[in-house]
Length: 376
Image 1 (tube, helix red, strand yellow):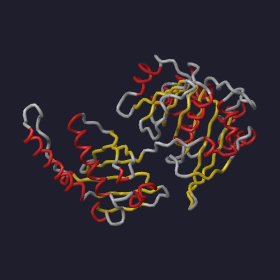
Image 2 (image 1 turned 90 degrees about the vertical axis):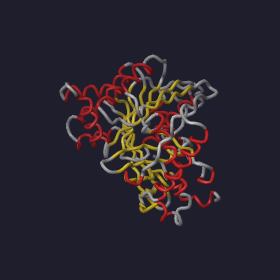
Image 3 (image 1 turned 135 degrees about the vertical axis):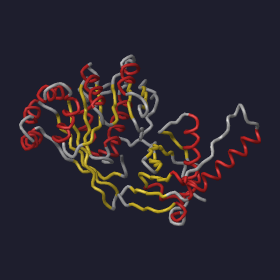
Image 4 (image 1 turned 180 degrees about the vertical axis):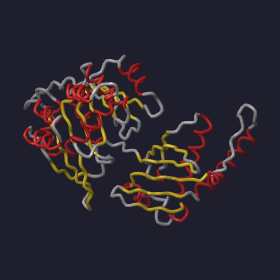
């Protein structure tokens, strides 16, 4: 099977394997200390056979980047999507292996070259009557910032990342402290922009960056020759606050990236990090900047009044960037709307959405439309 037969994988965002419990009667391996080699080999072969049968008949939903969906049993889709059965079986073997050894709900599978050599991140979920494996193709290649922003790149660098980026400046000073919040709907390109901003920052200035992510869509370089370092911490199955206090606060760093604020605790970590003088880049779901900020306030409100919660957010926000995608036949059209969180914008925010939109326009909120390929 050559790689061209599996080009359909290039455009796939997510694959879901949904298996009913009656279909997944997979025998377990005996204890290695109690079984001899022949017993282990026989049990292993029985396990693989059972997985082949179960996963070969699994119901699969394929979601493409343009939102097209294809659904059906794996064995019936094999003709149209070569390798889908092999991929299902490989993931099945890995899944049952992880269940036996560490009961991990999230794990990574490296597909063979016959399947394009892609890396897949698998999240296992259990419903009332089905076992669902949500499989997301990882994106190991970082997008250069200029390929995303094109002629808009200098604006981002001068206004958002650096306090003194002038022509010929060899050692620009990063903006210190505060939150750069990237807002957008799911799969709009928030993480893509964040990863590119961090990578660009690391290339231009020697910094230490730490990321807290539940699903690491991009693999950042551990270090760059100029002395920049990046430590990516996986919080998929860990308490984010515990990781933040035990790891992040005990290490010297210049930049923290929090991948997707989902819970009150996440918002609290972002606020605490920015309040301590660190620069924080964070992503957050939102259809617009005003509605996104209102949701953020509700996440940190807790025992505080809404007025106090708004003041807390206002004190740490420096920039809000809205990312809006529009799917088309020529790739993905992405719009970026960066807004400096000035005093005028802060005041208008408490007045209402209309006043906020007007203030953002007066503050120089800009829209730029860029044609890029698939981003997350």
